[in-house]
Length: 281
Ligand SMILES: [Zn+2]
Ligand SMILES: [Zn+2]
Image (cartoon, rainbow, N blue to C red; front, side, top):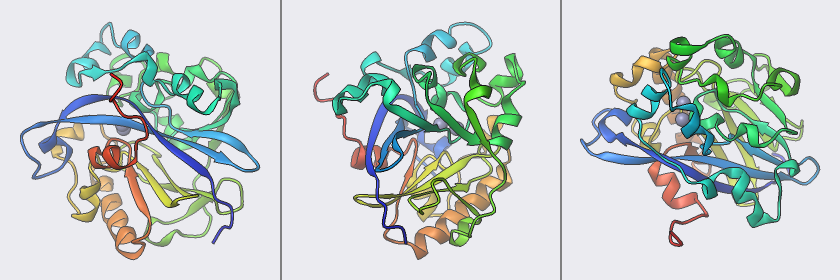
């Protein structure tokens, strides 16, 4: 077990409204706020980094015209400038140039929209994930919830694209990639929702956190082994792999009860983990 632990803050970057019975099979017919959570992490040697960048106001500009306006119509967005990650950094006396690295869980727009606020950061992503979206435009991009305009124009120069992982298995989640070779941040593959989707097991000052990206929307999908509705299959990469990934996460959660699992949009995780409240609205 790593002795290195990271400072970790979980931030909300805004939300969309989604039907609970779409988010999880057997869910209620009610609209649920789906926040887009990101993690701000500080490694004692490697400095500040981000897990995803969530929503940012440019998401509204990027979804003004067809075909990407269909995205916004499907998921109405509630975004405020002060909730962008770049704006929230001031709470820790940080500026965007202090962020050295950004790990991109996958290339869906709700995880990428803040990326262009960090023109100096190294960008870390799965090579398979990038290959799947790199040349997509228009409706082909939309079908993968990818909005090309959100990607920095120098993405390829700043990106470290990871090959298939071959590090030691993380129990049922399979091979890992140890980011700093000290066990503090280990990436795993969570296939199904998006090609090459990554998860991150972080050793933090408050214990182990598993950032599970969009492997499911609600944390209880994992505990109850209940995947999202098939209605969401339109834009996902591989529905069968989604079920397998949820089963693997279920097995992991049963064996590692001390690990807190944080899916990016889980309302329960938002309530429990997010430091920014809306009280000053
Ligand atoms: Zn996604
Ligand atoms: Zn998402």
